[in-house]
Image (cartoon, rainbow, N blue to C red; front, side, top):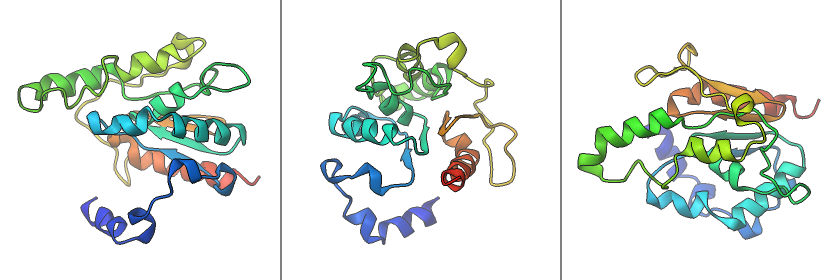
Length: 189
């Protein structure tokens, strides 16, 4: 991961990102919304400029992927035609409450509210955006220690619903990446 990040740091695209106000959704084949936590993520997770771009992109019916806190961006993005979240009718997952709570309780003595970005848990906010949360929100197996790898998807949980792919946490990232790439590959079909 560190080596890959160093590669990113060397790229001109990484060092000069396009402002949300200049993004043209039709220029992209897929939209990937990464997660993250801590107060510094609020500018991304709560950006109304980003939500406007996401709403426009969602309407194009192209692949969308979100992992962990990234699902909040979709939950908070309003479909202008329905007045509801763009994922109101989708099956989804996100960072489960038990994982968020465990990370906070295990580290609060040292990191304070680092793992509590917002007063509401991610799962609670995402469920509130769904029309039938008990049927549409899929939490996955309770797992805190095992992560997926490049060759083992055993402990992972990824939900793909049409052209939308979601995952819970970094432990699901390998499988999430493969499934999202599959959506991109099939987008032209």
